Image 1 (cartoon, rainbow, N blue to C red):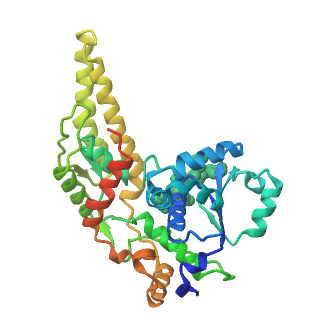
Image 2 (tube, rainbow, N blue to C red):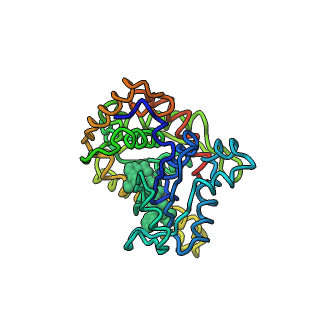
Image 3 (cartoon, rainbow, N blue to C red):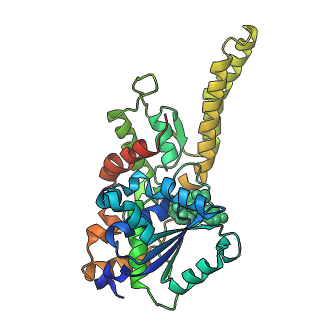
Length: 339
Ligand SMILES: NC(=O)c1ccc[n+]([C@@H]2O[C@H](COP(=O)([O-])OP(=O)(O)OC[C@H]3O[C@@H](n4cnc5c(N)ncnc54)[C@H](OP(=O)(O)O)[C@@H]3O)[C@@H](O)[C@H]2O)c1
């Protein structure tokens, strides 16, 4: 392991990143450009039909984002020259041979220069991020009930810890002939249970309510938690679907006067049922993920004196209340939430 020389190891290295417009790859790229601007080159594979659209996506969806604010401020007027010196946008589609990179010379250059590959291209089907759909729905006052077990552990972890672990692993396992799997999570070392998670969310929105489009603060209530899918369906039927049926019949008698309101109710009910179906496999999952390899790497990292502020990924350091109240939810509201 060459951990002592972090981030020196990355100096003059060439890295290829697939899925460069994605959530994790962007966080990785930002970290590299911030902590090791002397990296030799970053080839960013971007799903695009030609160079012009790949370059446009690089600027609009990656470098231009607020995530890169520190890098933007550091390089200021020299940002464009810094980026064009270090970063090459490569139009690609990883479904195809040679990752869909059509330019033969570029392919040859990449294959010869490459030191590290980060494969982050994926078809993700999170309707909304990892647990954020539930938080948003609750804050917007759209979630009155949900299903879950108070003992269920949510295996969540801040993305910057995942990125730190990826970078440390690149250094630690460079040139190792064997494959190693590192699971970066919190369920073993610092588990957060559903009940605690729910209490923090409820407290956050009670103290910091969202505002609707008409400027009124949105009042949130405690969510009714149902501990099985059957009880959830029964609750939805009695509490919402049956009254809606009655409302529909009455509305037909008065010539559909409340049709808009009925459509709105239907949409809200559908959204809650959809969220419940989406999260069903997770909210009753009682397993935990083995992260012993990650723990070993983390211990080696601290023994080597690597700056834990810069490259830490020890889940035990997370104070969940503080993280959710002061970082995660405010970030979600600022960057991702649409009222
Ligand atoms: N985010 C998390 O919380 C999380 C948690 C655990 C594991 N992971 C894993 O980490 C990996 C990355 O996740 P993510 O959250 O960064 O995903 P993401 O935000 O959905 O990004 C996926 C990236 O892959 C690209 N892509 C998809 N199909 C492609 C293709 N055929 N050719 C080229 N590029 C293609 C997407 O390009 P477009 O922009 O063109 O769609 C996008 O840049 C996934 O394997 C995911 O399962 C993520």
